[in-house]
Image 1 (cartoon, helix red, strand yellow):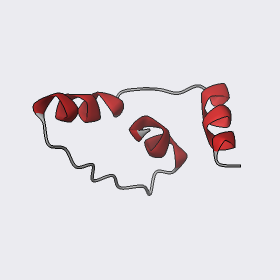
Image 2 (cartoon, helix red, strand yellow; image 1 turned 135 degrees about the horizontal axis):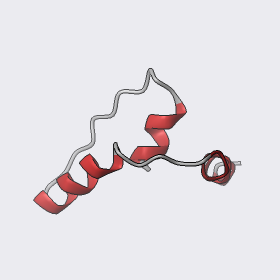
Image 3 (cartoon, helix red, strand yellow; image 1 turned 60 degrees about the horizontal axis):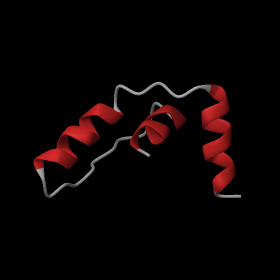
Length: 48
């Protein structure tokens, strides 16, 4: 979800909260995920 939000707009500022070290590492890893155009289209369509 974080990777999707980061790729939607360069103006997005994410401030994810976490209560564990594991979730912190997962949140940081999300910044390095590159989603394909197909991935973005599929994720965008979920809200429709």
